[in-house]
Length: 443
Image 1 (cartoon, rainbow, N blue to C red):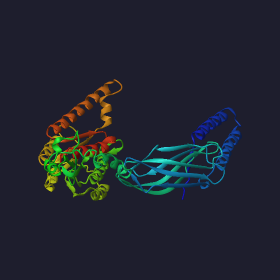
Image 2 (cartoon, helix red, strand yellow):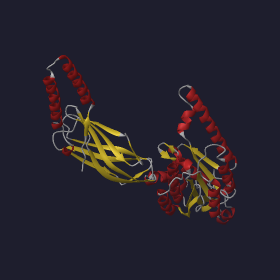
Image 3 (spheres, rainbow, N blue to C red):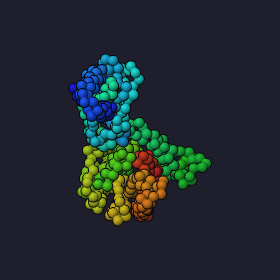
Image 4 (cartoon, rainbow, N blue to C red):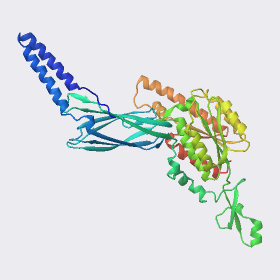
């Protein structure tokens, strides 16, 4: 059921002030001007009533709204709206606003429609930015338009009751982007020439000029009386552990998504890529305390488990305990694994425990540390104008960036792989690094 309200417009308020001034002037200059003042105000009231009578009411509008049931974090979900006038035509100017949950950000915040004279129906798609995982709701649509002569602003509203489940973004999985990126590894363009300890024997093939002489199988060549080479491919069934820090620093927003949500989106893509690559994928998250550990299993099976867990994963407001969290993870791992750690730090001091615990873990495992660059910090460090405030902020920002680079450099010198990238490139860069690690047989 719709609700209709109205309020005086600026035009009406201005008119009232003008009429009040005229009335005062008449009262001061004309002793018998009371009748004239009554006529002026009576005419104004009559004009206002005529204005309201000629303005369409909310009852003369039909509103239809439709919203998808599920959407991805960081993406837009279209709200499809249709407004139709039962009688006459739509107002020339309509401004619409949504009442919604905090997980949604309409783009733009208000939709303004300018209709051609005589238009009876308008259809539109309103993009809604999905910023947080969970269920969100559209509760009401409010509309503002002016009365026929502009004396009033009409404020009808309609209840919507539209729900949307916002889940981690698996669009790269659904649209085949991950599979396409993995193709070089799958079709043999890379794994055909892999060599070294741990490579898996694939087949024998006739030795040809240009091939590595070390691939020649001399015994079989002698038996077959023809030069044959051993062809190997990347070993499968490696173990990958996705490790997410869900402490308060991961709640910082970059490009309208929290670092934790960026990490979850990339983690699900990596879990899917691990399934395509034939590896076993596990999951672990920690904050001020150790949290859930999902044992490694074949990647495509692991994907469903990780997806269900990540849907309800919440960011902690307390500081992350890297020592407790990573020590607990190490106790779960009996086999050498690729451990992909998504975490964050503020400066070199707060990163000391992170560096120390990752260095301990790298003695038995291959560790890939993933960090997210903040483009806003980069912009502050390189201001486009010179002022005392801008220079002061730039000095502080550059100091933070230098400390960040120092920590990443220290990690790399300790044998820890580092991936420091912009959130927009996180998923593609992570899958690319995974492919390189498999191609180089580093696990």
